[in-house]
Length: 378
Image (tube, rainbow, N blue to C red; front, side, top):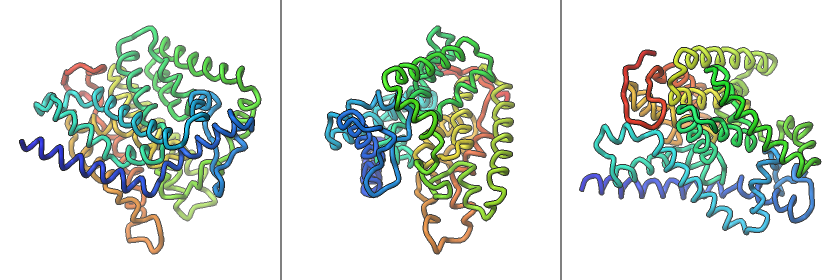
């Protein structure tokens, strides 16, 4: 009975939080995609020339992503928003199912109510709320990469790497998982991921040569298309540095930070190449830290690390990270006059990402979805 009450209360809070977030975000990104795809496929325009009226924002993904999104050209925006919401909700449920089973089994919550509570917690996480209400693709890509890592890479399947490659062809940021395959010397999966990404990209290039040329030679390098680096929602190392008064040396400091972050990540995953779940967790954290732009909705890639901490001996880090990153606290420092401790409060996601990079448990042999709890050795 207590769990039923807990579920009802949590579901109400989750729905309310998503609705409130939606009143602010209004499926902004879906509207950009929808307008760009219609301009491309229905009006015959160049997709990268499109800007949503009254904004500097346009389509920022590779042409293959446009091909995947092409049905939007023939759907009203309301239907697009509904489909995006349902798809993100389903992807969240799948990610929770793939990663949280050991925790729920240990708690004795491996039933419908337990799973419903876990899914609500996933949907309540602020980056997931932001993904839903912006109409973004982050959870879909996370689900695709997670499935590839757990059921392909971890088990040595011949098709391992395909999901990673397709995700990279849709959005470049999952490319850090190709680095993971390189560092852990999974040569077949590495070649498969590169081949899949290249194949999808070449397919789009053959179908849309002008758009492909425009993206790879111009649109990709136009940072004005993605927003201001110093905006509070940019919770990457570059975003933190952009908010500091170090304009003259900012890019040099960022480069040093990226190299140091890559070195720590490579050292940790290189010591535990058999721990694919841990590798998934740490590589998701890496992507958030080193990307020039990591909006809060991109931080869904931290979910595997938070779950891993709760599962394997560092619940204080996983739970505190989840609570603070779900609380909307960071936004208190969005506008002036800002509260004290801006360096800390305005960069909560960055600090927790760095903590997860250093302290997420690695070294177990639970590399797929099985319920094992071997000794942590790193």
